[in-house]
Image (tube, rainbow, N blue to C red; front, side, top):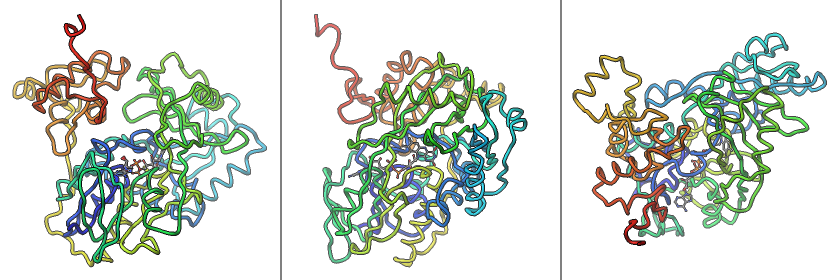
Length: 478
Ligand SMILES: Cc1cc2nc3c(=O)[nH]c(=O)nc-3n(C[C@H](O)[C@H](O)[C@H](O)COP(=O)(O)OP(=O)(O)OC[C@H]3O[C@@H](n4cnc5c(N)ncnc54)[C@H](O)[C@@H]3O)c2cc1C
C-alpha cells in the first residue's frame, strides 16, 4: 500500500514527486513509457515564461510567476542548464500598440517584475536582427530558457534519491475506489494507494473521466518546430515572440540553452494523442511567421524538425486539486504552456495539498541537491587531463557534433533512473542531438548501452517498446 501514486513521469509528475519527497511518505511514480520525460515535457519551446500571458487572477498566472521565480535556484540545486536571457514581444504596427500595452498591464497585474516597453531604436540596439518593420516591443528581463529534459530528469532523480520509487513501462488502464483509497490497474500488475495524482499530460482527461462524473476534455494541440544548428545560435539573444494579433500568437525565435536556434511552434488541434508528426504546411507556417519578426534567419542551418502536443483543456486553465466526486484523486491536468515554467510551483502546490490531507511530517534527511552528468567541457584543461588519467573513457569522444565522451554516456546509463535507450542517452548527454542527428554516434552509443546494461545489441531500442534498431545480421540475409 502506497501513500501516494503519481501517474506520469513528465515535468509535472517529477516536480510533484520531488516536492513530496521532502516528507515522510511512501510514494511511487508510474509511467507508461520506458523513461522519464517521454511526453510533452520533451518537445516544447523550453522557455521559462515571465508570466504576462495568462489571464489575471488565474492559477496559470500565479504558478507561472512563482515557477519563474523558483527556476534559477532550482537549476543550481539540481544542476540543470538555465539562462535568464529575457524575452521580447514584438509589435510590428503602431495601431497594435494598445495590445502591447494590455500585455504589459496584465504582466504587472500578474506580478511580473521589470517589464518595459522598448521603442524601435532601443529594440534594434538590443537585437540587431529584429525585423526592420518592428515598431516596439515588450521586454521581460525575467524570462529565461531551460533544458527541458534535464529539468525533468533532475527532479525525478532527486525524488528518487529521496526515496520515491519509479515504475516504467507500466500503463494505468483502470482505477477502482477501495476503502482506504484507490486500486490502480496496470499492464504490470495492480497497485494500492491512499492518494492518486493524475499527471498524465494529454491523457489526463481519460484518467479523470474514469473516476468522475464531472467530465473534462483535453485537446492535443500540436506545435511544429524547426531546430537550427549551433552556427545559427547567436542570431538572436532574447526569446522573440510575436504580438498576439491577426496572425495568432505563438511562433517564436529563440536561442536554446545549448546554443541552437529554435523556431516555432504552430498551434493545430488534432484528435490523436500520439500525433507528434510534423507536416509540410506546419513547418512552412513556422518559417513564414518567424521571418515576420526576425530577419535573415539562416534557414539552411535547419538540422531537424519535431512536434509536441499541448494538453489543452477546454477552459484553458490548470486543473489542480482533489476531484470533487473522487476522494483521494488529485488532478494535475490541463498542464499546457506555461507548464514547464510552472512545474516547480505545480509540484509545490500538489505536495502541499497532500501534506495537509495526510498530515505529513518533514524528513530530517531530505537531500536538496543533485549532480548532473559531468560535462568535461566545464572543467579546466588541467582538471580534464586529471579526469582522463583517472577514467580514460572521458578522453574518448563518441558524439563528434556535441563532443560527448564515452565517460558521460556511461554516467548517463549507470546513474539511478539511468538511460536505457538511445533517446535516453540523448536526453541526458546530447549525444545524437547535433548536426549529424546521430548518424555517426548511434552504433557506438548502442555498443556502450549493450556493454553497460549487459544485454545484446539486438535488445537496444531507440525509445523503448518495440523500437528496436538491429533487425538481423548482414549474413542472415545472404
Ligand atoms: C508546442 C509546445 C510548446 C510549449 N512551450 C512551452 C514553453 O516554452 N514554456 C513552458 O513553460 N511550457 C511550454 N509548453 C508546455 C509544457 O511543455 C507542458 O505544460 C509540460 O511539459 C507538461 O508536462 P506534464 O508532466 O504535465 O505532461 P507530460 O510531459 O506529457 O507527461 C505526462 C506523462 O504521463 C504519462 N502517461 C500518460 N498516460 C499514462 C497512463 N495511462 N499510465 C502511465 N503513464 C501515463 C505519459 O507517458 C507522459 O510521460 C509547451 C508545450 C508544447 C506542446
